Image 1 (cartoon, rainbow, N blue to C red):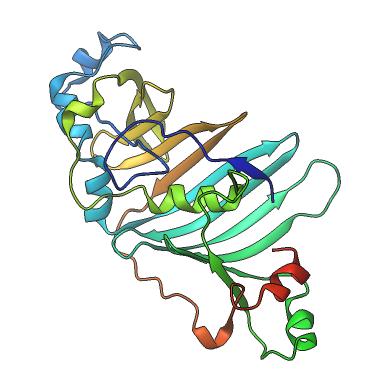
Image 2 (cartoon, one colour):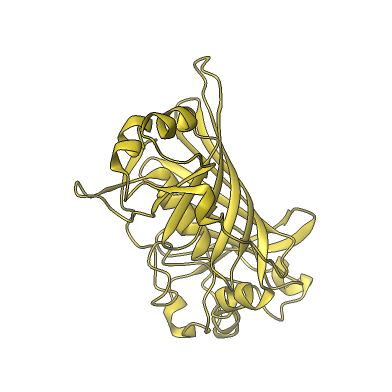
Length: 261
């Protein structure tokens, strides 16, 4: 898995959004005629700043959402996460698929994650490694989610799951923290009209003009864009794998070494 230097925070939405630093925006109370007169790049209004300050809180209040994350991290290679997130519980699950453009077969993992831990299933060689170490059979390996390693980098997978879990907040943000945001236009996303906004650091945010929920977030990590789509917002209940079906890689570093994890 590619390692990345920890992304620079994009902007301050709240103290709880350390990785993302921003998610934002909705054109509030603006009719079609008024929107047509706007020019992309116009600063957000006071009213818009008030509404966009609620976006992360609205995600949490909705309960959760389906998501898809696309990260084309190298020429011909892309990591995609497709799953669902319980924003209130801070737990998600997804299928992670890495595709390559050089003829290598795609790699697939089943993931469960919280803000603190990452579970991976469908790991090649896991059964053999556990048997060889005299450990009980397990379906998942578990390890802490790492923001940065000793060398100042983190794996792309860790960065992406942190981005997903931090797309919500338990309180609204300060409207005054959105002064550098600009209006970028409108477009259809997953069948819903969305207002587009851009942060001072270049991240693009799309929010449903009727639902007032986050539909898409796009930001740059080093030399490629990461796109997160959210849909079907609503309550979620996602149990983590049982301890009996999990091997803790922190307690068994030899397993992590054998599996290259």
